Length: 218
Image 1: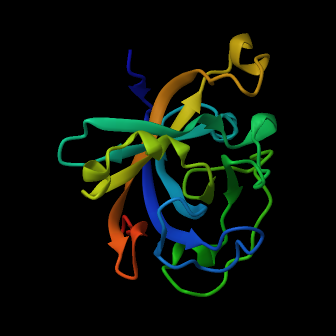
Image 2: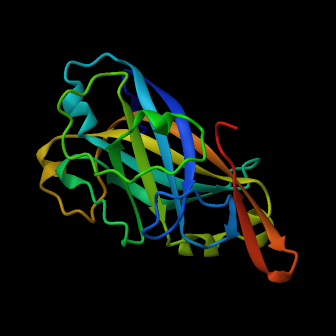
């Protein structure tokens, strides 16, 4: 059964592609080989939250990333990142893992669509003083694209997208005491952002596929 929507309103302030590896302060090019590592950030704030404990809410967020091949038909949807905690004690900020994500407090400059370098911040392990209106930055790192091997080439060459979904995770014992490799329990959906991909053949090498990732705010 699909999760219900949380009683909140989220505004996306900025999307930014980040250089792979340790150089996450630099912007990355929008085009790269299809399965090259991909890192990006989404800066957002809550315009409204109707719950009683916003600090607890922030430290119980998770994210998932799906790949939707051929947006027009949406016949093929693959999981690139299963629902994963991004804040609190269950977050896994280690960028050396194949696919992962973490949440951090954002600087004021992170909301601007500028090309200036952004310093990497620490993962959010607490939310003291958290109130709606404060900006947060979600960083996602993807380097394992083996799931795309299941997609027929004719669908890859159509317009595709990543669906990045922010969710509130349940706080029962089944979540807190489960192994990190197990799926989290989703309590409600917070926000979803669609990031468009365009895939084409490399003009210099017909065997290589090039992806171009488009800014969802453009």
